[in-house]
Image (cartoon, rainbow, N blue to C red):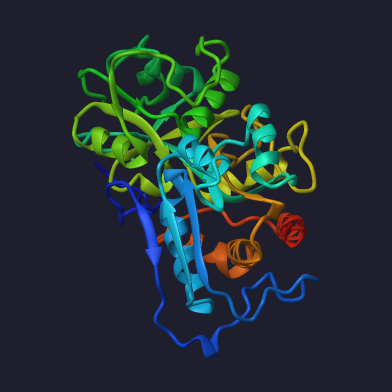
Length: 376
């Protein structure tokens, strides 16, 4: 299998369910203010301590590991943990008050927003788009010598709906005239758990496949039976273990698997952070978005040259009001670091997560929302 540099973004994989807890051992006397907090109009305290717990999207786990490490370089007395249980589990834990923040590949639903008012002691949920990454359609064809296999949204939809069942099907061959495709069965692999990655993937299929995907977008996979994996790593492991398998996962985790180049207009576009950022910048805010809920309505049908429309925006979800002042201070400082130029650059490092950094304009909006967090 011939690999492009893009496919090496996630070469270092994390295995198993993750609870990231990093305690720094550097001296607190040299701690610096998190970039993005200083000068924001609402300075974080110079000394922070205690614990800060988060849970949620497994797509973010490599980026979160980097963010916790960077944050602890500045605030070594705050013990930060993140349990990568998936978007749905993270939202559940957050709304139940078990964690101070959540990571989610999908925005809160209407009923969850109502629950958030009680959890946030009369305040509201704060939803910040701090992790932007392409979703890769990954495949295991070790004997195929191609940088990428090309597919339109309609072809991908038919593959995952099991209407196309072999790799040398005429529909795939027509989009890859220079690739010798094997006459072996396609093994579609989906997430077994409720997942924001699944919701984003099915949103793309529903919007861009011109009717080839007959299901509504959902965080739960709509087709029973077949192969599946728990969490992002579960999908990657399942695809890796079966020749002919194809799945979908955060691009940072693609590793040595082959990846599909998506048809956009008249060209085929491989995933990249730059191609993902093009779609996000061109997309409007979702209906109901507020100054604290910066939810984006992604344009899945764009024909802009060089754009990659199969993108995941993973949100950090917090409260605008916390009962405890220490929780409010720790959340503000941590989110300020994540949103800062330094934090975004850390996540963009291919050895960390290869994410697309947020724009300066979006960073300013995010910081304003973070500055509004208080204790009641």
